[in-house]
Image 1: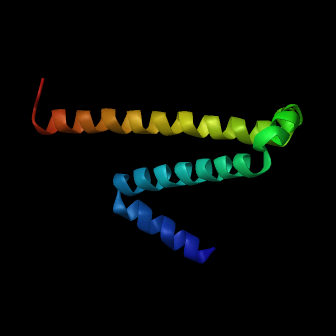
Image 2 (image 1 turned 90 degrees about the horizontal axis):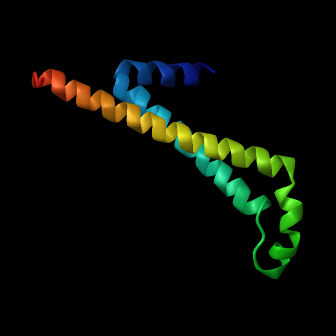
Length: 98
């Protein structure tokens, strides 16, 4: 627990870039884990997958993980968009562009 607090303090001491990159890393990592789970437990290939697909489609855990994965992708796009707008604002302010 103490080690985690030290890491968090170092990230915040690095500034906004550290928080931004950490947020991107966490969102990307969790989304990757969701996709790996879906590929391993909610998808079967071949003819067997075609036959078992209705069972896996109705699985509450597969549906929940898929919804989490989609929400993470949407948040990721929003984070990148907000960072782009912030960067444009920074450059505009720095160069005094009106």
